Length: 73
Image 1 (cartoon, rainbow, N blue to C red):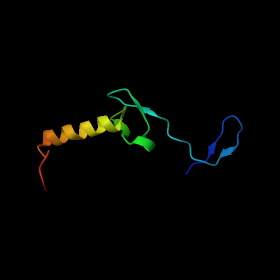
Image 2: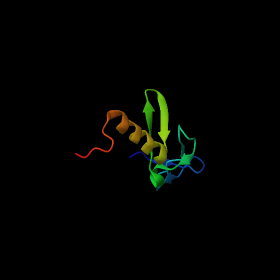
Image 3: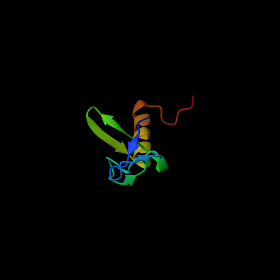
Image 4: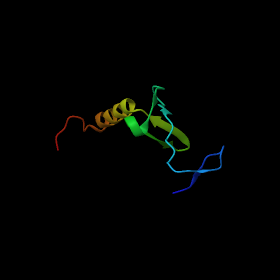
């Protein structure tokens, strides 16, 4: 793990920095991955982040397109 320093004091910070709130690429709402869930990553070179609601909607859509929606194993 890397050491983190406060840029104002030059002192080493003991706690890990909190991940900043993200903005959903679809609905533009702010969300926290740590507190609410969701995901963030890259499509090629483009950063994309999805709030929990939009992520579950994307997963649901993919299940429907694959034809697996509502089927029991």
